[in-house]
Image (cartoon, rainbow, N blue to C red; front, side, top):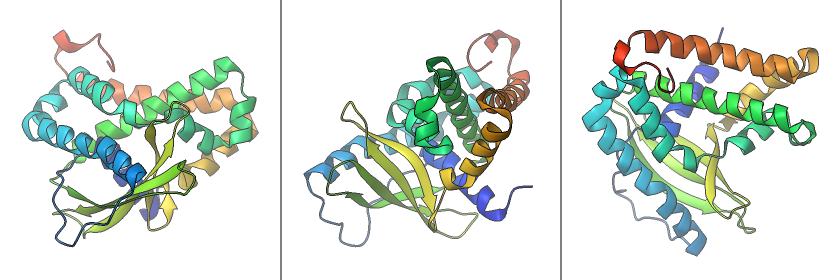
Length: 234
């Protein structure tokens, strides 16, 4: 059974991946950002507007057409998330580097589909949340940072959460994790992931993730019109 913290992180993870929100101007004086932080801001803020526009006009359509929503996520969201780094953090950097190329590719794909599943869960549970970016920070080395967001919701008290980011080898800033009250998604899930690998091997972890994802997408795709089936994720 999921703990309250686990459920909260899962909810925040889903809606943060989606950025299912509208960006509002802070009432307080905005922080002064350096050049690198301005770059981060310019990379992430536009996504808020894009997703807000799509969900405000097409949420009902996407619920009926999983393939269309999948295309939207693939086109607009995935490029801003570094699934490989998230996967490495989940199982441990040394273990991740030690995987065969085939296992590494399969595990990253399984985690990527898991994040996609969370995005679909976020779509189902979206209830008018509004996100306000209140700060952006980058470390002195220009390698890691975070985007602090205020989440205003009509169904739960306002919350602050952090979107953890890193600079990829290509020089782009990408999200890798979500932090809420000092707890990250990776910190919650890594023990489960590593235990499965240690006791049953990486193939068992891949199979477990793939099984959960197949079951979920089978159920939501069963509700879609037959003419829409045959396209990802159906």
